[in-house]
Length: 283
Image 1 (cartoon, rainbow, N blue to C red):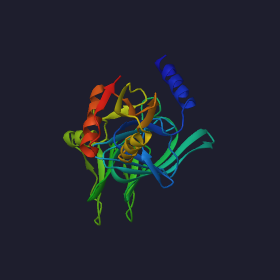
Image 2 (image 1 turned 120 degrees about the vertical axis):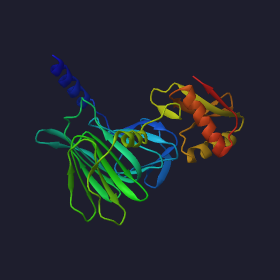
Image 3 (image 1 turned 60 degrees about the vertical axis):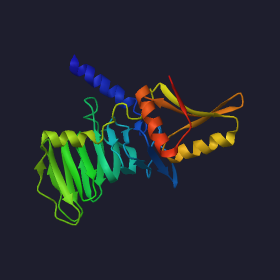
Image 4 (image 1 turned 180 degrees about the horizontal axis):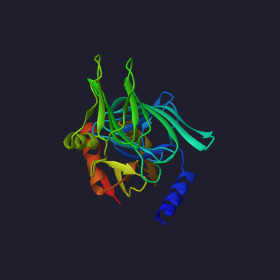
């Protein structure tokens, strides 16, 4: 009975799979498409050639069509090189190629979509990983590139070097810049905990999502030009604000905050950077 239920849930999940999209954002972060850069926000759909960038202290969760999730850490840059579905002999096969230019990422799947058909390649700077696993962490760092297998299997190889297969959980591959890759090692619990935290959205640190019920309102202007100036500054800084008007008054609003503490964290961060006017937080 349990197996039947899981299979039913899996088929339902795949049948309703939508396009690749943004799930949650710990601000600030940006999406660059066709030379235009704008703040990243939940429910944005992703397209090939999109580039996602996160700022200091930021995190991003992306949802892929076959049910997997990509998590990005702070000061990261991800290029969506390929993103499509193709009908194979045995059904739909999800194909993607992602390039981590800088920063940390994590690729995960849950129990309902581990068997989904996928062909995903992730480049961590000069290291390429062909994902057959279900849980993978990696980072393009200033002096080295790292890929760590948490579950499943993955083939990895630095540019100009042979591929190595990681099949043991917690095994990792390190390729220092301008040096030979190091022998495959095994990460200890403390280091893994530290690595994993780099890509997890933190509580009360400025997260927005589709279900977020809190909002921040900056100022209450009588002239739209004043509101537009603040709007432009916040958009440029990576905050997806909107202008709302009522009775000839104009307000700059950021909605979707996960909690009051998240809203307060954004207000503090923005004020330190831009010296914004007093903000009102409400649910």
